Image (cartoon, rainbow, N blue to C red; front, side, top):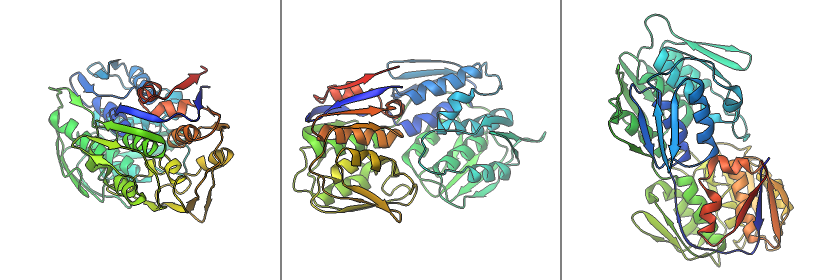
Length: 420
């Protein structure tokens, strides 16, 4: 178990460069096994999720190497095999191997995935899509087995009952190699889905409409990687540093961002009274004083991202008054509340609404990083507090934040990670 040591009273100052998007990367790696040639991905974040996905690839005889942000994957000798349960259970996005293996082999056996414990995230919409393409889905204990008949997958019309990033990606991966045309309606519109479609199209896939609420896929027989694919910047990482810079900074420039991907987040910061200097691919934050309380309601893109409601919470504690957060996507994403209150925070949750009061008497404590975004929000709060904060289960933070210790050092902040 790893622990992160955060000494309070340190101010962020300087520059930080955002890495490739975690939520793109965890879809691009499973997508790579659909290729009939080796694949190269650039700007891949150095996070534990990537290491776990590489372990899963190895179990399928897919060689991979990761150096200086470049991930090389060779799926040309891939073998269908059962996937390592421990890696699957530690990573929710491992379920993308369902769609990728189904597209590659016409069948897949995958353990129920794990990942962050932020409430139920059922895969019924994934299964609905696979069945529409002609697959048979069976659950056996903690495994899902998906098979097709001799005719394989066939294009179909799929209407999702609710907007789901996971289901959109998973069914897209299967449909790329299906025979005929697949029309997916009521799909998610996140930038990471556009990134995935761009990657596949550059290899010869025929996908139109990514970024809208309808995606059309004409199935193809072969995919060949001819160029290196650069992962888009991580909008969640960018939002995290922007919030921390406003809450506890003395002038921070956040580089390698796509401001349009952060529009709803930026709008809320401006509404609070944070002055931002927005460039083409970077944002400067002078700091944040005399902040006003706001109300945040999370929703699918292009709304306010659920992954940013916890990282912005330390900033809300500086506002003079009561802020509210309504997480319509994951209302059970509240495990950070008890930990923040241990540090002197004034935050509560009732009837699906999180209330955040101005909190002036913050102090270090020993707290638990229950999941990625809850964990990193405790880093921001720890820097605002008096004394030292010890964050247990810090491996959750390392799952999602690229070289976080090194990046904070570049912002004149010393973090320490100890333990195995």
